[in-house]
Image 1 (spheres, rainbow, N blue to C red):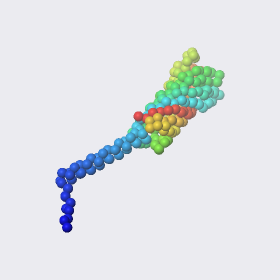
Image 2: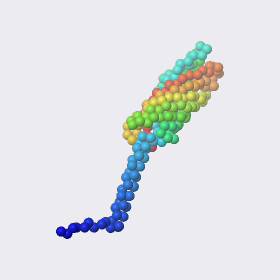
Image 3: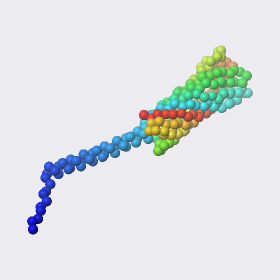
Image 4: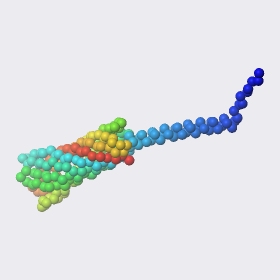
Length: 213
């Protein structure tokens, strides 16, 4: 009874199979790497920009019988953040509010307040939400108008706060945060306010939208 002998595979066929296997492995590795990069870009992006509506609530203080009271107001805040890694980064801000600053029996001034600040930011990215905290310094520019003899003041401030970003898409997010400012009340270079320097506190809750890139 004849026995069929299986032909051995040619060297050329073996080489082609080995090349196909190597190409498949390389393509698989490239796909995994690409997915990893995309996932990092979505969850742990290095840069973002946000615009928020803010509320401004300044503590009322009294010094030598003179009360400093600031009406509650609203404004806008723009923020740019850059992160060195998954957790640590910094932010720069510009904010604007418009309110009335009153010193009982002495003066009442409509004031445009400009904020320029920078802060260290630490974040903790999760699947849908990213909590964060911040601390830094700020220059608050108090620009009075419609009051004769008053001039602008620029006062340094310590700023701190925290909040969270909630992912809406891979790039767009909702930001809710609270920031506090410690600083000296403005004197506006008015002789009647000279000597009434006092430390006060401004609370600024805010909410808005941002974009990661």
